[in-house]
Length: 187
Image (cartoon, rainbow, N blue to C red; front, side, top):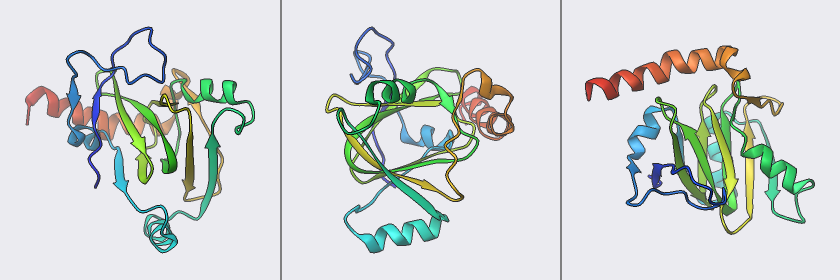
């Protein structure tokens, strides 16, 4: 597993594509993100054999490539605004970065944002029911392979409307409650 750098998101008026670090930085151990259900691998995106093996092992039967950049993605401004709206999915969100880079923000058990930076070769899997958002970094470009185990539906439910979904209830019960208890007892 590739241990990406993660940190507590600093709310500021900076552009969303800034890294939003506190000064001094408040790092978040990658193990904490793992406890929240986030999975990350680093893989060779140039190797078709490696990609096919990963898809088979993880049960991905459908995929599509999306390029997010001005002049490439139709409705770029609106779409990037939508990516940055807090939302969840009732299924795992699996993205392999083929090129470029960006930031994912995920909610911690206490509601604070945690930010981490993804680049070429990072495969990120967010669990169903986890609130998150995505933004490009200052480079303004990412190409990603979107991976699905069943036919792609692209269901995004904005907060607070996702709170009543079974996927959210399951996430709160199985992940957030466990992580929160672990933090309280420091075990």
